[in-house]
Image 1 (cartoon, helix red, strand yellow):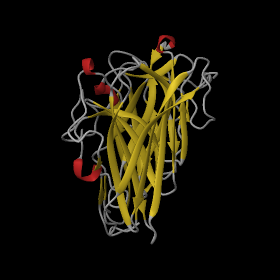
Image 2 (cartoon, helix red, strand yellow):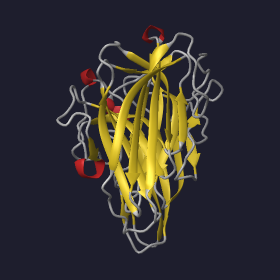
Image 3 (cartoon, helix red, strand yellow):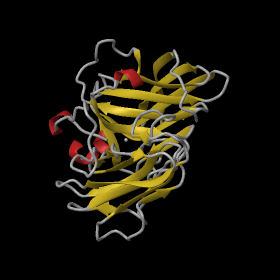
Image 4 (cartoon, rainbow, N blue to C red):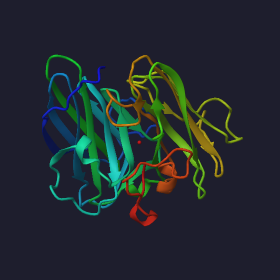
Length: 338
């Protein structure tokens, strides 16, 4: 990847549609599986988008969408995304918005807008096909009309345009059968800096909630191309001592699912530390930022239960700084965290 990647004029069309799904809940979190068939049928919620990414360009396009207003609470034990080749990632963020913003669901350039209403992430994938399915009785819960930010990120290093398509489907279940609401962590090291011609390790440590233990469901990483290794550990004395998550893959890291045999509870008062190793052979300095070509990242994503506060989910009070301009909602406003 060079540093001369320009931003394109991106044309997208997005469609919100509904279909019906229907199964046997998985006994463990799944990161890639057939479409679930839940025992009681509830309507799926599907968002889709199409775009043209110009040759030699990088595009990060956002759209704000709204959950149905007429269905009550939406319990989502499983979600899946599918996108065409060339995407760096797809993300779905929960927000602190209480109504649709000016412009409604119009598309906008995430690079320019830098939305300040992100309240946590819900879903992230760097693979063309990804499914996250939680164990029986555990689900993410969305309020009627809750507003979600969708983000696609494409880096086209070829001489031809990319016809980019993405489909994101939430599979729902009876909210009365939810025993535990899942939350999502977004631990980001905003202090990342990799000098020219250097091999460095960047580390951040995040405290666990002071109100509840964190039962891990899924963990996965997010880095850019200078990264060569990622590892997450905990100082919880009840943990086995082995890493919670580890990978050498920056482009398509596979999530780790915690099942009954290797379930990990990170207790109140303990910490999660995550570190990225970088190898920068260029003349450039890379700092934290959204561009896959010009910036670097070191992020630990994850799902856990029971859902707690945004202080925990965003790693507020950790050793790394919090990004300026991002609004953290109160507990009354709802929380979630990628």
